Image (cartoon, rainbow, N blue to C red; front, side, top):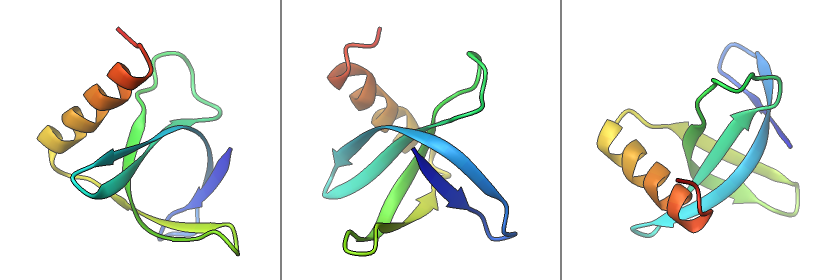
Length: 81
């Protein structure tokens, strides 16, 4: 479980389902901890990590094709279909 805080200071808890590597970058596949079954996963680019401080910085994606590609990789690597 990780807690993300947006620009407005709102915190949301997510379950990290996987980290997908694609074209030299890493993407986190997240699911809101308090969501129902119909909630889609969230895919964010990992832009920096500080493992000593247990911190990471994420960036949202706007490219639907990239989101679909990352989701397909996630599904294939986790036998989801």
